[in-house]
Length: 492
Ligand SMILES: Nc1ncnc2c1ncn2[C@@H]1O[C@H](COP(=O)(O)OP(=O)(O)OP(=O)(O)O)[C@@H](O)[C@H]1O
Ligand SMILES: [Mg+2]
Image 1: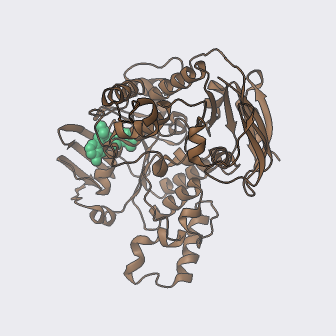
Image 2: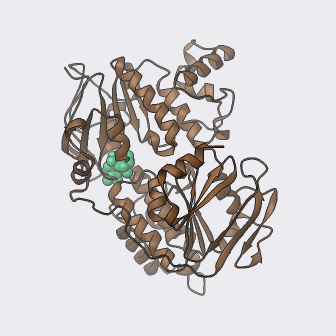
Image 3: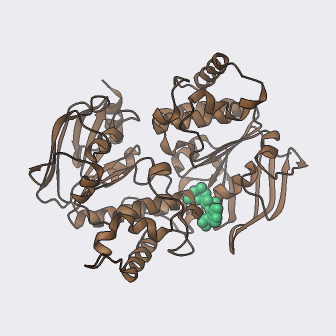
């Protein structure tokens, strides 16, 4: 008997079919990966199980009996826990309040102290350490994700769904998460795990189901298939080169950072960057990579140090001035800061670019705006009905692509990209690398921050490894090795 059995599930949004007759079966004590391109229907499928969406047709069976899931309460009663792809915590509340949010009014846990202790125990039991009294808005996004996991486990679950849980976690955190999942599996919990990291899927999953364009493309035992076959099933073609080769081009020095500190996470960082160069920044979550990017972009103030742009010291900075000076940034936290969800794709993409598409009178040349957007939708294969679709209605990965497109559409001299391919499917990753190379060829200097070491060694000309707010080491292309980068990130 299956713990979860979905039979012939269909779901339309407007006229568009997101799911077509999907059948999906998960055993108890099984970790079942759900894979597929951006927009394939993965989140829609699990949201039908969590009660966030209702199915148009089909049947759901839990432990053999047909289940009626009309809303999230129904789903919870059935023992279904979910960690959504999008942010679901309340930033103003504490860690403990967020974890027990659903149980707050029930009479249980009315005492703050008791709740704090319980929250701490729960966080420790999954291998982490976060002060339960802190406000969620003051946590790093990796820590926020840990809170999401603890929240999902605060009630007893029979079925646990994780939609891209590892996207914001570093290698070590992912390992801890896997330990937790393995424990749950031993207790008979059915785990549904959505991820674009094929390596991870093969590390943790017993079975893999691939969705393609809203239909089931196949369901295989992990032990009986391999990465190549799964990728082929996802994309409908095989993927030979993940990292297309590019010629290193570098011109004049464009940026020079001297001894920059933010008084907290960034501690005396210096480096130089040339036009057309692709500079990678590696390091563990918490090593100061994101804070360095924020300091460069003037999103956070710097305490000491100097920044030179094309030889001239850049003082009195603000994010607005930074943008006008030709420095762009795609932030790490795209769930919250990357795109404006109620706006259309076109509005989001052209938001940063009013200058180049406006005529002398300041009117937006709508034709040019439209052409630009269509071109970017095509280049990044953003799955949408058209440029006027609300970003809100796109799949998670496609929203990420819009956040990227927004900056790729602008003429920058320096572009900082924090986690360029987070949440993006393997096929589209290659397209993003191509676009990065295209920019580099045009002379744009790129700073790429990534937790995926393979990605950095694949696309960068040079890599800086950060450790505890300092640049620990600098590697040139000849010296690249994933083991070395990991070693430098961990060792003091
Ligand atoms: N609320 C919505 N309104 C309209 N269309 C939607 C909505 N949610 C999803 N869709 C559409 O349904 C399709 C499937 O989206 P879904 O979010 O399930 O994809 P996904 O497989 O989770 O992709 P990703 O890997 O990017 O997260 C997409 O074409 C998307 O645009
Ligand atoms: Mg999704």
